[in-house]
Length: 437
Image 1: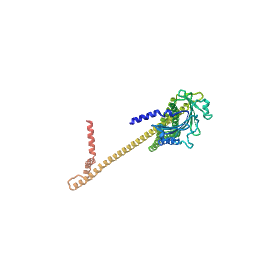
Image 2: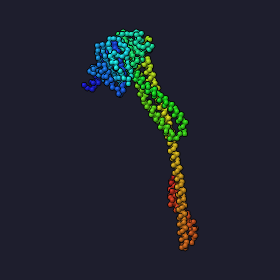
Image 3: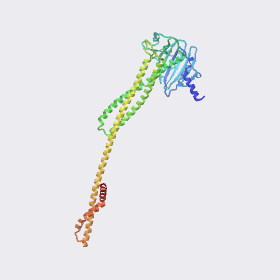
Image 4: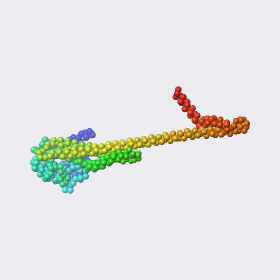
Protein backbone atom coordinates (compact mmCIF):
# COMPACT_ATOMS: atom_id res chain seq x y z
CA UNK A 1 0.00 0.00 0.00
CA UNK A 2 1.37 3.40 -0.97
CA UNK A 3 1.82 6.27 1.50
CA UNK A 4 -0.99 8.18 -0.26
CA UNK A 5 -3.38 5.23 0.11
CA UNK A 6 -2.47 4.95 3.79
CA UNK A 7 -3.22 8.63 4.34
CA UNK A 8 -6.48 8.37 2.39
CA UNK A 9 -7.64 5.38 4.45
CA UNK A 10 -6.80 7.27 7.64
CA UNK A 11 -8.80 10.28 6.41
CA UNK A 12 -11.79 8.02 5.66
CA UNK A 13 -11.56 6.57 9.16
CA UNK A 14 -11.55 10.10 10.59
CA UNK A 15 -14.77 10.84 8.71
CA UNK A 16 -16.56 7.68 9.84
CA UNK A 17 -15.51 7.95 13.51
CA UNK A 18 -17.22 5.27 15.70
CA UNK A 19 -19.56 2.98 13.69
CA UNK A 20 -23.17 3.91 14.41
CA UNK A 21 -24.18 0.35 15.28
CA UNK A 22 -21.91 0.55 18.33
CA UNK A 23 -23.87 3.50 19.77
CA UNK A 24 -27.21 3.27 21.52
CA UNK A 25 -29.31 5.22 23.96
CA UNK A 26 -30.11 5.43 26.77
CA UNK A 27 -26.46 5.77 27.73
CA UNK A 28 -24.42 6.89 30.71
CA UNK A 29 -21.21 8.58 29.50
CA UNK A 30 -18.18 9.51 31.56
CA UNK A 31 -15.69 11.88 29.92
CA UNK A 32 -12.28 13.01 31.11
CA UNK A 33 -10.20 15.52 29.14
CA UNK A 34 -6.51 16.30 29.59
CA UNK A 35 -4.16 18.92 28.22
CA UNK A 36 -2.03 17.39 25.49
CA UNK A 37 1.31 18.17 27.14
CA UNK A 38 4.54 16.86 25.69
CA UNK A 39 4.89 14.35 28.54
CA UNK A 40 1.35 12.98 28.17
CA UNK A 41 1.24 9.33 27.09
CA UNK A 42 -2.27 9.22 25.64
CA UNK A 43 -2.05 5.68 24.29
CA UNK A 44 -0.78 4.26 27.59
CA UNK A 45 -3.52 6.13 29.47
CA UNK A 46 -6.20 4.67 27.19
CA UNK A 47 -4.75 1.12 27.30
CA UNK A 48 -4.55 1.21 31.11
CA UNK A 49 -8.23 2.15 31.38
CA UNK A 50 -9.20 -0.49 28.81
CA UNK A 51 -7.33 -3.15 30.78
CA UNK A 52 -9.05 -2.12 34.04
CA UNK A 53 -12.43 -2.44 32.32
CA UNK A 54 -11.68 -5.87 30.84
CA UNK A 55 -11.19 -4.79 27.21
CA UNK A 56 -8.68 -6.95 25.34
CA UNK A 57 -6.03 -5.21 23.16
CA UNK A 58 -7.20 -7.00 19.96
CA UNK A 59 -10.65 -5.43 20.45
CA UNK A 60 -9.22 -1.90 20.27
CA UNK A 61 -9.52 -0.20 16.87
CA UNK A 62 -6.76 2.35 16.34
CA UNK A 63 -7.13 5.27 13.94
CA UNK A 64 -4.96 8.29 13.15
CA UNK A 65 -6.07 10.51 16.02
CA UNK A 66 -8.58 8.30 17.86
CA UNK A 67 -9.30 4.81 19.03
CA UNK A 68 -12.38 2.93 20.20
CA UNK A 69 -13.21 -0.47 21.66
CA UNK A 70 -16.44 -2.34 22.45
CA UNK A 71 -17.09 -4.91 25.15
CA UNK A 72 -20.44 -6.62 25.71
CA UNK A 73 -21.59 -7.96 29.07
CA UNK A 74 -24.74 -9.65 30.31
CA UNK A 75 -26.21 -6.33 31.47
CA UNK A 76 -25.09 -3.94 28.75
CA UNK A 77 -22.40 -2.73 26.40
CA UNK A 78 -19.25 -0.81 27.20
CA UNK A 79 -17.67 1.53 24.64
CA UNK A 80 -14.28 3.20 25.16
CA UNK A 81 -13.28 6.08 22.93
CA UNK A 82 -10.07 8.11 22.66
CA UNK A 83 -9.95 11.44 20.77
CA UNK A 84 -6.65 13.28 20.35
CA UNK A 85 -6.57 16.96 19.30
CA UNK A 86 -3.62 19.27 18.93
CA UNK A 87 -3.73 20.69 22.48
CA UNK A 88 -5.82 18.13 24.40
CA UNK A 89 -7.08 14.58 24.39
CA UNK A 90 -10.28 13.02 25.70
CA UNK A 91 -11.27 9.57 26.90
CA UNK A 92 -14.98 8.71 26.83
CA UNK A 93 -16.54 5.71 28.55
CA UNK A 94 -20.06 4.81 27.37
CA UNK A 95 -22.21 2.42 29.39
CA UNK A 96 -25.31 1.43 27.43
CA UNK A 97 -28.11 -0.56 29.07
CA UNK A 98 -31.88 -0.46 29.06
CA UNK A 99 -32.17 0.99 32.57
CA UNK A 100 -32.47 4.80 32.69
CA UNK A 101 -29.06 6.29 33.62
CA UNK A 102 -28.59 8.45 36.69
CA UNK A 103 -25.82 10.86 37.57
CA UNK A 104 -22.93 9.33 39.48
CA UNK A 105 -20.10 6.89 39.04
CA UNK A 106 -20.43 4.42 36.17
CA UNK A 107 -21.52 1.00 37.48
CA UNK A 108 -18.74 -0.72 35.47
CA UNK A 109 -15.97 1.28 37.15
CA UNK A 110 -14.00 -0.56 39.86
CA UNK A 111 -14.19 1.11 43.26
CA UNK A 112 -10.45 1.89 43.35
CA UNK A 113 -10.42 3.40 39.83
CA UNK A 114 -9.63 7.09 39.76
CA UNK A 115 -8.49 9.64 37.21
CA UNK A 116 -5.35 11.66 37.96
CA UNK A 117 -5.85 15.38 38.33
CA UNK A 118 -2.57 16.57 36.84
CA UNK A 119 -3.21 18.18 33.48
CA UNK A 120 -6.94 17.49 33.71
CA UNK A 121 -9.11 19.96 31.84
CA UNK A 122 -12.56 18.63 32.52
CA UNK A 123 -14.51 15.65 33.81
CA UNK A 124 -18.09 15.15 32.67
CA UNK A 125 -21.04 12.99 33.67
CA UNK A 126 -23.52 12.81 30.76
CA UNK A 127 -26.86 11.04 31.05
CA UNK A 128 -28.64 10.43 27.74
CA UNK A 129 -32.20 9.40 28.47
CA UNK A 130 -34.49 7.42 26.22
CA UNK A 131 -37.63 9.45 26.91
CA UNK A 132 -38.62 13.08 27.28
CA UNK A 133 -38.69 14.91 30.62
CA UNK A 134 -40.83 17.72 31.92
CA UNK A 135 -39.27 20.89 33.29
CA UNK A 136 -39.92 19.59 36.79
CA UNK A 137 -38.30 16.29 35.87
CA UNK A 138 -35.19 18.15 34.62
CA UNK A 139 -34.91 20.16 37.83
CA UNK A 140 -35.36 17.04 39.94
CA UNK A 141 -32.18 15.57 38.42
CA UNK A 142 -30.05 18.40 39.85
CA UNK A 143 -29.54 19.75 43.35
CA UNK A 144 -32.17 22.14 44.66
CA UNK A 145 -31.57 25.89 44.38
CA UNK A 146 -29.07 25.53 41.54
CA UNK A 147 -29.46 27.51 38.34
CA UNK A 148 -30.19 25.10 35.51
CA UNK A 149 -29.47 26.04 31.91
CA UNK A 150 -31.21 24.28 29.07
CA UNK A 151 -31.53 24.58 25.30
CA UNK A 152 -33.24 22.81 22.43
CA UNK A 153 -30.84 21.62 19.70
CA UNK A 154 -31.01 20.05 16.24
CA UNK A 155 -34.13 21.93 15.33
CA UNK A 156 -35.83 21.15 18.65
CA UNK A 157 -35.33 17.37 18.48
CA UNK A 158 -33.27 17.24 21.66
CA UNK A 159 -33.03 19.11 24.95
CA UNK A 160 -29.74 19.51 26.79
CA UNK A 161 -29.59 20.71 30.42
CA UNK A 162 -26.73 21.41 32.83
CA UNK A 163 -25.93 23.53 35.85
CA UNK A 164 -22.22 23.96 34.99
CA UNK A 165 -21.50 23.04 38.64
CA UNK A 166 -19.17 20.12 39.48
CA UNK A 167 -20.51 17.47 41.82
CA UNK A 168 -18.68 16.31 44.95
CA UNK A 169 -16.20 14.38 42.76
CA UNK A 170 -15.55 17.26 40.37
CA UNK A 171 -17.75 16.07 37.50
CA UNK A 172 -19.92 18.51 35.55
CA UNK A 173 -23.30 17.01 34.70
CA UNK A 174 -25.24 17.11 31.45
CA UNK A 175 -28.72 15.74 30.86
CA UNK A 176 -29.75 14.95 27.27
CA UNK A 177 -33.18 13.64 26.24
CA UNK A 178 -35.34 13.52 23.10
CA UNK A 179 -38.46 15.59 22.64
CA UNK A 180 -40.36 12.96 20.60
CA UNK A 181 -38.12 10.23 19.25
CA UNK A 182 -34.44 9.38 19.41
CA UNK A 183 -32.00 10.85 16.89
CA UNK A 184 -29.75 8.61 14.72
CA UNK A 185 -26.55 7.20 16.22
CA UNK A 186 -24.29 9.56 14.26
CA UNK A 187 -26.06 12.56 15.78
CA UNK A 188 -25.77 10.98 19.23
CA UNK A 189 -22.01 10.95 18.89
CA UNK A 190 -22.04 14.46 17.42
CA UNK A 191 -23.99 15.84 20.38
CA UNK A 192 -21.67 14.22 22.95
CA UNK A 193 -18.53 15.27 21.07
CA UNK A 194 -19.83 18.83 20.89
CA UNK A 195 -20.46 18.91 24.65
CA UNK A 196 -16.90 17.66 25.15
CA UNK A 197 -15.56 20.22 22.65
CA UNK A 198 -17.28 23.08 24.46
CA UNK A 199 -16.06 21.98 27.89
CA UNK A 200 -12.47 21.29 26.83
CA UNK A 201 -12.03 24.51 24.91
CA UNK A 202 -13.62 26.63 27.62
CA UNK A 203 -11.20 25.16 30.16
CA UNK A 204 -8.29 25.62 27.74
CA UNK A 205 -9.36 29.24 27.41
CA UNK A 206 -9.59 29.65 31.19
CA UNK A 207 -6.44 27.66 31.99
CA UNK A 208 -3.93 30.57 31.73
CA UNK A 209 -6.10 32.72 34.04
CA UNK A 210 -3.88 32.01 37.08
CA UNK A 211 -0.80 33.12 35.14
CA UNK A 212 -2.84 36.03 33.81
CA UNK A 213 -3.65 37.32 37.30
CA UNK A 214 -0.03 36.94 38.39
CA UNK A 215 1.24 38.68 35.23
CA UNK A 216 -1.36 41.44 35.63
CA UNK A 217 0.02 42.21 39.10
CA UNK A 218 3.58 42.14 37.75
CA UNK A 219 2.55 44.46 34.92
CA UNK A 220 0.92 46.88 37.37
CA UNK A 221 4.21 47.05 39.28
CA UNK A 222 6.08 47.68 36.02
CA UNK A 223 3.59 50.41 35.01
CA UNK A 224 4.00 52.10 38.41
CA UNK A 225 7.78 51.83 38.15
CA UNK A 226 7.69 53.17 34.62
CA UNK A 227 5.77 56.27 35.74
CA UNK A 228 8.28 56.83 38.56
CA UNK A 229 11.16 56.36 36.13
CA UNK A 230 9.67 58.98 33.82
CA UNK A 231 9.28 61.48 36.67
CA UNK A 232 12.84 60.82 37.86
CA UNK A 233 14.13 61.15 34.33
CA UNK A 234 12.40 64.49 33.81
CA UNK A 235 13.95 65.86 37.01
CA UNK A 236 17.49 64.52 36.54
CA UNK A 237 17.93 64.53 32.76
CA UNK A 238 19.12 68.14 32.45
CA UNK A 239 21.95 67.70 35.01
CA UNK A 240 22.74 63.96 34.93
CA UNK A 241 26.19 62.90 33.81
CA UNK A 242 26.95 60.18 31.28
CA UNK A 243 27.68 57.42 33.80
CA UNK A 244 24.41 58.02 35.68
CA UNK A 245 22.47 57.94 32.43
CA UNK A 246 24.19 54.73 31.32
CA UNK A 247 23.29 53.05 34.62
CA UNK A 248 19.65 54.10 34.16
CA UNK A 249 19.75 52.81 30.60
CA UNK A 250 21.05 49.44 31.79
CA UNK A 251 18.22 49.09 34.34
CA UNK A 252 15.61 50.10 31.77
CA UNK A 253 16.94 47.57 29.27
CA UNK A 254 16.56 44.77 31.86
CA UNK A 255 12.94 45.84 32.49
CA UNK A 256 12.35 45.99 28.75
CA UNK A 257 13.43 42.35 28.44
CA UNK A 258 10.90 41.38 31.14
CA UNK A 259 8.18 43.17 29.18
CA UNK A 260 9.21 41.37 26.00
CA UNK A 261 8.75 38.04 27.81
CA UNK A 262 5.29 39.08 29.02
CA UNK A 263 4.38 40.27 25.55
CA UNK A 264 5.41 36.98 23.93
CA UNK A 265 3.54 34.95 26.54
CA UNK A 266 0.27 36.81 26.29
CA UNK A 267 0.49 37.23 22.55
CA UNK A 268 0.35 33.43 22.49
CA UNK A 269 -2.45 33.28 25.07
CA UNK A 270 -4.48 35.96 23.29
CA UNK A 271 -4.10 34.23 19.92
CA UNK A 272 -5.21 30.92 21.46
CA UNK A 273 -8.08 32.63 23.32
CA UNK A 274 -9.45 34.10 20.11
CA UNK A 275 -9.27 30.66 18.50
CA UNK A 276 -11.00 28.96 21.44
CA UNK A 277 -13.69 31.65 21.55
CA UNK A 278 -14.42 31.07 17.86
CA UNK A 279 -14.53 27.30 18.40
CA UNK A 280 -17.08 27.73 21.21
CA UNK A 281 -19.21 30.01 19.08
CA UNK A 282 -19.09 27.58 16.15
CA UNK A 283 -19.97 24.63 18.42
CA UNK A 284 -23.15 26.29 19.65
CA UNK A 285 -24.05 27.37 16.13
CA UNK A 286 -23.62 23.77 14.91
CA UNK A 287 -26.27 22.70 17.43
CA UNK A 288 -28.76 25.24 16.04
CA UNK A 289 -29.46 26.12 19.64
CA UNK A 290 -32.91 27.42 20.59
CA UNK A 291 -33.87 29.02 23.90
CA UNK A 292 -36.42 27.34 26.16
CA UNK A 293 -38.95 29.11 28.36
CA UNK A 294 -37.90 29.18 31.98
CA UNK A 295 -34.22 28.37 31.32
CA UNK A 296 -31.14 30.37 30.45
CA UNK A 297 -29.60 29.06 27.18
CA UNK A 298 -26.52 26.88 27.46
CA UNK A 299 -24.45 29.24 25.33
CA UNK A 300 -25.18 32.42 27.31
CA UNK A 301 -22.68 32.13 30.19
CA UNK A 302 -20.07 30.27 28.12
CA UNK A 303 -19.92 32.80 25.29
CA UNK A 304 -20.14 35.71 27.74
CA UNK A 305 -17.28 34.35 29.85
CA UNK A 306 -15.16 33.40 26.82
CA UNK A 307 -15.57 36.89 25.36
CA UNK A 308 -14.68 38.42 28.74
CA UNK A 309 -11.58 36.26 29.19
CA UNK A 310 -10.39 36.88 25.62
CA UNK A 311 -11.04 40.59 26.19
CA UNK A 312 -9.00 40.54 29.40
CA UNK A 313 -6.11 38.90 27.57
CA UNK A 314 -6.37 41.48 24.80
CA UNK A 315 -6.44 44.39 27.26
CA UNK A 316 -3.43 43.05 29.12
CA UNK A 317 -1.59 42.63 25.83
CA UNK A 318 -2.45 46.23 24.91
CA UNK A 319 -1.18 47.42 28.31
CA UNK A 320 2.06 45.48 27.84
CA UNK A 321 2.51 47.05 24.42
CA UNK A 322 1.80 50.54 25.80
CA UNK A 323 4.39 50.14 28.57
CA UNK A 324 6.85 48.71 26.05
CA UNK A 325 6.44 51.83 23.92
CA UNK A 326 6.88 54.06 26.98
CA UNK A 327 10.06 52.26 28.01
CA UNK A 328 11.29 52.31 24.42
CA UNK A 329 10.72 56.09 24.34
CA UNK A 330 12.61 56.52 27.62
CA UNK A 331 15.45 54.34 26.33
CA UNK A 332 15.59 56.41 23.13
CA UNK A 333 15.64 59.65 25.13
CA UNK A 334 18.44 58.36 27.36
CA UNK A 335 20.38 57.08 24.36
CA UNK A 336 20.04 60.44 22.59
CA UNK A 337 21.08 62.34 25.74
CA UNK A 338 24.10 60.06 26.20
CA UNK A 339 25.07 60.57 22.55
CA UNK A 340 24.79 64.35 22.94
CA UNK A 341 26.84 64.35 26.15
CA UNK A 342 29.51 62.15 24.61
CA UNK A 343 29.56 64.36 21.51
CA UNK A 344 29.94 67.45 23.71
CA UNK A 345 32.71 65.71 25.62
CA UNK A 346 34.38 64.79 22.34
CA UNK A 347 34.10 68.36 21.04
CA UNK A 348 35.46 69.70 24.34
CA UNK A 349 38.36 67.28 24.08
CA UNK A 350 39.00 68.36 20.49
CA UNK A 351 38.92 72.02 21.54
CA UNK A 352 41.33 71.27 24.38
CA UNK A 353 43.64 69.41 22.02
CA UNK A 354 43.43 72.29 19.53
CA UNK A 355 44.24 74.82 22.24
CA UNK A 356 47.13 72.66 23.39
CA UNK A 357 48.41 72.41 19.81
CA UNK A 358 48.13 76.18 19.37
CA UNK A 359 49.98 76.71 22.68
CA UNK A 360 52.67 74.30 21.53
CA UNK A 361 52.90 76.08 18.20
CA UNK A 362 53.20 79.48 19.90
CA UNK A 363 55.84 78.05 22.19
CA UNK A 364 57.63 76.61 19.21
CA UNK A 365 57.52 79.97 17.43
CA UNK A 366 58.86 81.64 20.56
CA UNK A 367 61.64 79.08 20.77
CA UNK A 368 62.39 79.59 17.08
CA UNK A 369 62.60 83.37 17.68
CA UNK A 370 64.98 82.83 20.57
CA UNK A 371 66.96 80.43 18.42
CA UNK A 372 67.49 83.19 15.83
CA UNK A 373 68.89 85.59 18.43
CA UNK A 374 70.99 82.89 20.08
CA UNK A 375 72.54 82.00 16.70
CA UNK A 376 73.04 85.69 15.90
CA UNK A 377 74.67 86.24 19.32
CA UNK A 378 77.12 83.38 18.91
CA UNK A 379 77.96 84.39 15.33
CA UNK A 380 78.51 87.98 16.44
CA UNK A 381 80.82 86.85 19.27
CA UNK A 382 82.72 84.64 16.86
CA UNK A 383 83.03 87.56 14.47
CA UNK A 384 84.30 89.81 17.32
CA UNK A 385 87.03 87.27 18.07
CA UNK A 386 87.97 87.19 14.38
CA UNK A 387 87.97 90.99 14.15
CA UNK A 388 90.16 91.28 17.29
CA UNK A 389 92.67 88.83 15.78
CA UNK A 390 92.71 90.75 12.52
CA UNK A 391 93.22 94.00 14.50
CA UNK A 392 96.22 92.53 16.35
CA UNK A 393 97.73 91.41 13.04
CA UNK A 394 97.23 94.91 11.66
CA UNK A 395 95.05 93.62 8.86
CA UNK A 396 92.16 95.91 9.85
CA UNK A 397 92.37 99.35 11.42
CA UNK A 398 88.77 99.66 12.65
CA UNK A 399 87.62 98.79 16.15
CA UNK A 400 86.63 95.09 16.59
CA UNK A 401 83.50 96.17 18.54
CA UNK A 402 82.43 98.44 15.68
CA UNK A 403 82.97 95.70 13.17
CA UNK A 404 81.05 93.25 15.41
CA UNK A 405 78.16 95.74 15.63
CA UNK A 406 78.11 96.06 11.88
CA UNK A 407 78.10 92.22 11.61
CA UNK A 408 74.95 91.85 13.72
CA UNK A 409 72.50 92.10 10.73
CA UNK A 410 74.50 89.43 8.93
CA UNK A 411 74.35 87.22 12.05
CA UNK A 412 70.58 87.71 12.30
CA UNK A 413 70.17 86.78 8.62
CA UNK A 414 72.23 83.66 9.20
CA UNK A 415 70.01 82.83 12.18
CA UNK A 416 66.93 83.16 10.02
CA UNK A 417 68.38 80.84 7.42
CA UNK A 418 69.46 78.24 9.98
CA UNK A 419 66.06 78.27 11.78
CA UNK A 420 64.10 77.87 8.52
CA UNK A 421 62.21 81.10 9.00
CA UNK A 422 63.55 82.65 5.87
CA UNK A 423 62.44 79.74 3.71
CA UNK A 424 59.01 79.81 5.32
CA UNK A 425 58.62 83.55 4.64
CA UNK A 426 59.75 83.10 1.03
CA UNK A 427 57.23 80.27 0.55
CA UNK A 428 54.39 82.40 1.94
CA UNK A 429 55.45 85.32 -0.20
CA UNK A 430 55.49 83.21 -3.34
CA UNK A 431 52.03 81.78 -2.53
CA UNK A 432 50.66 85.31 -1.98
CA UNK A 433 52.06 86.48 -5.31
CA UNK A 434 50.54 83.51 -7.11
CA UNK A 435 47.12 84.23 -5.57
CA UNK A 436 47.32 87.87 -6.77
CA UNK A 437 48.06 86.74 -10.33
